[in-house]
Image (tube, rainbow, N blue to C red):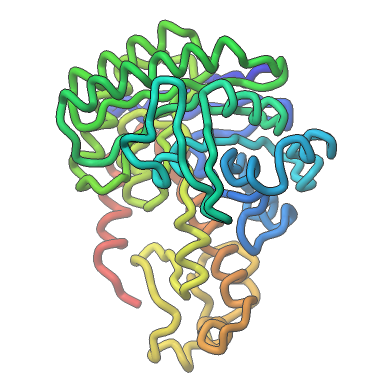
Length: 372
């Protein structure tokens, strides 16, 4: 089946939406934060730990899985779900973000993109058709169109040419998409330019994708510009389909994105900062390497229901982090992942009660005034 979005309630004061997404691997509520499992693994975490965090959906990366172990091997294993033994929904990105970070402007052609492998430097070529072909074999629940990912900032002229190419690539990818179990999402680009965001959204929607994402954010722009990029895009997206903001996972950005009509978010942040000893809390981000936690025998967060907070103290986790024990990063990855998913649970409650603006104010007051 294709994914199906059900809009159940809209906050009366904002664009925030509470809904569900039905997939082949179950139904989950939105808004939802999506942990990133780049190489078919959310770093340091097992599938069972993700289930315990009440994860609705995870993301894996087409570029990395294409290089290792290869889409043919994963197809032979029975698809990505069976290969990694994950029983929930999976979204695969197109590989575009990684490819464009490795490519030079002269290597971007109408046909596709030339770039060098980050593993061995070998020359590679990725086209919209190839990206979709790889994702078809990975057999994820949701595949993403291959888009051009421009840097920030660029000129209006550059961005205009870029979105036109992305639209042509989207059409090419849609034409070869052949997995009947898999949904395909289109991507809206346009940088900071309102007219280009509108054009990109309207033309992408004409292609009738199964869902839509907003790309080109969190690439170096300031927060207000990011929020404008969302505002310039969502009014033109269908109300009965998923809206996904790519690469965003900061707690405040999730709240601001929801207020502007976003349903899905993904980011490596929750596990990346954990490996460096950092944890999200309702009173802001903390670094467990700090000496003040050496004799702190309280959990990372008192009322948190995650495995880490129910069983371990800041002092113990600090000991693990400062002695380079891998368990420290694992425990903080569990906490941070659960923190962001719990945040979306609280957001859903606020939407149903039509109090999203009040929720934002209450969250910011605690988050920006640290008491730890």
